[in-house]
Amino acid sequence: MSSTFSRSFVALISGGLFAVGLGVSGMLNPANVRGFLDILGEWKPALMFVMVGAIAVYAVSNLLAQRMQKPMLEKDWSNLPLPGFDFPNQAKLGAVLFGVGWGMAGFCPGPAIVSLVSLNSTVFIFTAAMFVGFYGFALYERMKQNRAH
Amino acid sequence: MMMALYGGLIIGFAAAMLMIFNGRIMGISGIAGTFINMLFTPKARSAQSGEFAWRGFFILGMLLGGVVLARFTNIFTEASMVTSNPVVLIVAGLLVGVGTRLGWGCTSGHGICGIARFSGRSVIATIIFIAAGMVAVALVNALFAAGGN
Image (cartoon, rainbow over all chains, first blue to last red; front, side, top):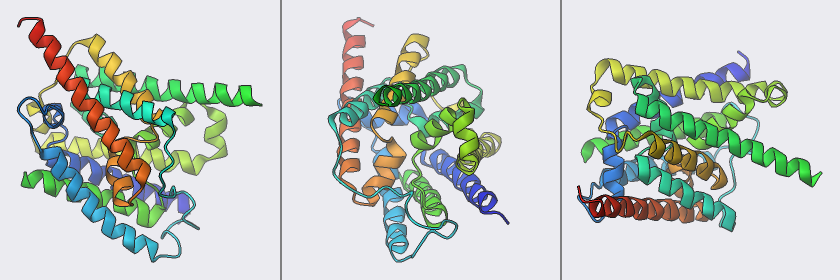
């Protein structure tokens, strides 16, 4: 079994579980997400509980990972970014832009992609624009690189 | 609230799988953003076919998970959209697409994985995008109230 195959299989299951988790938690409903951000209105704390549950499981698995020489299907941990405080102003601006868009529509990237299967035109418009944003940013990065050379 | 917590546990488990087996962060904006760039950049795709493959399978898993939810639950029919105004949706989608790439991650990568790994930059990012989302929602609400509905 090639490593590409097994890693892709793990990714497939992980993606599926992620979608089911989003569904179970109520986070595929933009009104719930918006409710969390609406602190001056009728505040809905659900998103906080989702984060607490997910962080708890992941923190434990992170302890496990730290005791492993390497990931099960990879040669080393080099693809895992090192935790750190470096976060330039440009990245902070990115977080602001993301937060504003998130509040406007109640979608972040995960729920936007999973909700495509609802064949809802609202989801299509948002997610298509998000993909254009992804690709536009990639083009911008490439342009910047080319100019540096 | 219990469902939110349970869903969070499932999401944490999905992210843990991707770390323990593949040594990767389950950040949806990074996975989907890189995938879309590779999709339209044949050179990048052929140079790293394994990188393209696992990301594609992760997204396929998300969609299949969504299909399961659509088949066995009424999550999607019960979801209530924040807005159906196409201009708002396009602006919000672009902001989320560009913002998450510029800001090195979204709710899953920073808000769950990064925080659970005690990464300072992810704590900063999460505080920023939640705060920005709260301000955006408050402003939109105020604008609607001023519009005299």
